[in-house]
Length: 148
Figure 1 (cartoon, rainbow, N blue to C red):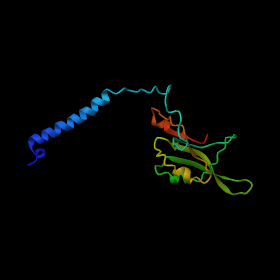
Figure 2 (cartoon, rainbow, N blue to C red):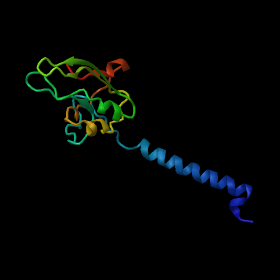
Figure 3 (spheres, rainbow, N blue to C red):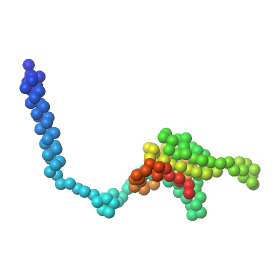
Figure 4 (cartoon, helix red, strand yellow):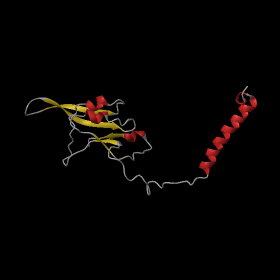
């Protein structure tokens, strides 16, 4: 019979594992603590360009965006974080009806940042920005209207 299988052996093995845990705890207890004074003296000054922080819809100088209200971004989104409200408007010159974007809502709190919506957009109307500070106390503030 081996020592580990006996009653005394199990007690010694327990004491050994307890000593290992205490050694790690004491080592961390005596290390110097580093406190980051956020946001005054933060070290996160540079964010990589490929960082996906928040969905945005770029506008030109006149306030127009490239969105054609096709709905491919909301269909590609696995969580359903994008909701689009459209209306049909008849063009006076051609007489054809076309969809016009009324409201583009984005739920930042439910977004997985998978970029499937950006890849699905045929006109490149939406993209991810680097603004990563989105902490709020109320989840309803995370629902953002992107077309202004």
